[in-house]
Image (cartoon, rainbow, N blue to C red; front, side):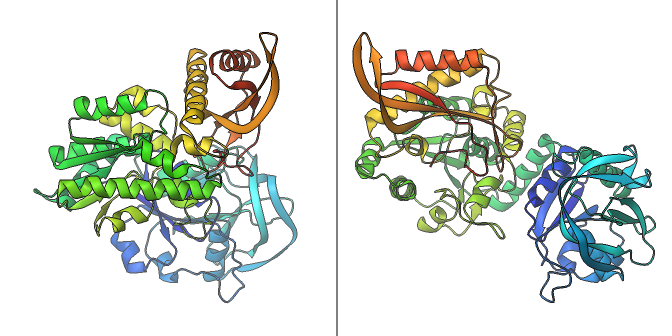
Amino acid sequence: MKQELILILDFGGQYTQLIARRVRECHVYSEVVPWTISLSDLLARKPAGVILSGGPSTVQDPSAPMIDPALYEAGIPILGICYGMQMTAHLLGGTVERAKEREYGRVTVRMTDRSGLFGGMKEASSCWMSHTWQIASCPPGFRVIAETDNCPVAAMVNEERKICGVQFHPEVTHTEEGGMLIRNFLFRYCGCSGSWTMNAFADTAVRQIRETVGETGTVLLALSGGVDSSVVAALIHRAIGKRLTCVFVDHGLLRKGESGQVCHVFSHLFPVRFIRADASRRFFDDLKGVTEPEEKRHIIGRDFIEVFKQEAAALGKMDYFAQGTIYPDVIESGQATNAAVIKSHHNVGGLPKELGFTELIEPLRMLFKDEVRALGEALGLPRELVWRQPFPGPGLAIRIIGEVTPEKAEIVRESDAIFREEIAAAGLDRHVNQYFTVLTGIQSVGVMGDERTYDYTIALRAVTTDDFMTADWARLPYDLIARVSARIVNEVPHASRVVLDVTTKPPASIEWE
C-alpha cells in the first residue's frame, strides 16, 4: 500500500508541529516543510493534501511569505490555518483587512454550514483564535461557513476545488472540536484511509536505511542509553543487523541501574557490536568547580565527543553515523525555523563533523517522544526501556544545581529512584509524562534524632504533556507526595527537606538547567 502523505507548509507559526501531530494521530503520515519549497519539489512528493500553517506575518506586508499561486491549480486539497487562510484569500482575489477588534484565546465560533469540513460538529464551538487581521470578503468561488461576533469569515470553503481555510487553530487542545475538523479534511477532502501506523513507519524507515547504507555499509551509533537512541539502535539493527556498532559512553551521571540495563539489552536482546566506555572519572574531574548550566552542558558535550572519538578511532573506518535526535531537540537547539536556542544538546549538530562523517542517519528527527515510544514497542524493545522516563544527554549533571560531584550525583540518583518507585506503585507511571528529582543546592536546618542538621533540599518535578514543547505540572495525590518526601528524607543521606515544583512550561523549562 502506498503511504499517504500530508505536507504542512511552515510559515513560522508557533503551533506548526502540533498540526503534524494531529494529522498523525489520525493515522495519516505528515511532514513539515518550509514554505519556500518549490512547487516542483512539492508536487514530486505527491501529497494527498497540503496544510498551510499560521504565522506571524501580515499578507499586506510586501515581504510577507507567499506560496506559488499555481499550487491552488494543482488539484490538491488545501487547508489554510490563520495566516494560511488569509494568504489563500489574498492570492485568490479576496480581501484581508485589520480587524476592528482583535481576537486572542478562546472564542465561540458559529458553524453556518455543518457539512464537509464541519461535518458532525456542533452549531457553535469554542475555538482558539490568535489574529489581528482577518478576511473581509472571500475570493470568487468561496463561501463563508463559520463566523464569530467580531470575525465575519471565521472559515471559508470552495468545495469544487477542495480548498478551505479557518481563522482559528484546530490543532491546539483549546479548540474543542479541532480534531474532528482535521479528520474531516483528511478523510472527506483528501480521501485518506488512515492506514499509517508505527509499524508502517518502521517498515519505511528500515527500507530507507537499507537503501542509504547499501549491502555492505556500516553504521556507528552514539548510544546514550535513553529511549531515543535505544529505539534508533533497534531500528538500525532490524535494517542491517551486525553491521551496526553501538558505542555507549557512560559518564557516571545515569540514573540508578540504567547502565546495566542498556548493556544487557544491546548485548543480548539486540546483539549488536556493543562497546561501553566508562569515562565517569574524566567527566567528574572536568566538572569540578563548574556551576553555570550551559558551561556544564558544553563540558559534557566536549568530553562525550572526545571519548567517543577515541573509541571510534579504535574501531577503524565506519561509513555512516547515526544518532537519536528527535524534534524537540531540534527546536530547543535552534536548528528549526525561527527557533531560539533554549539549551544545548550534544547530540544535535557537532558530533558527526567532529568524527569526520558527512553521512548522517537520524530516522527519528521528525518524531515526538510519544511517537518514539510507540515505535519502540513496534520494534519489540522491552517495556521498561520504552516507557522509561525521558533523560537528558548531560544526565544528572543538570539536575544538580551548582557544582557536580560524585556524592551529589548519588543523592539525586537515590532520591530519583524513590520517586520513580512510588509513582509506579501508585499506577501513575503511564499518566505522568516526566518526573524526577533535583538537588537544588539549597541547604536548610532540620532536626533528626533530636540533633540539628543542615543538609540539602530536594525538589520534585512532575509534568503532564503531549509533546514536551509545552507542559503542565502534574497534580499528584498529596498522600503520594507525603510518602515520597518521607522516604527521601529517611533513606537518602544529606537530604533534609523536599519541595514540589508547580511551574508550567513555558515559562519554565521541564529540566531545571
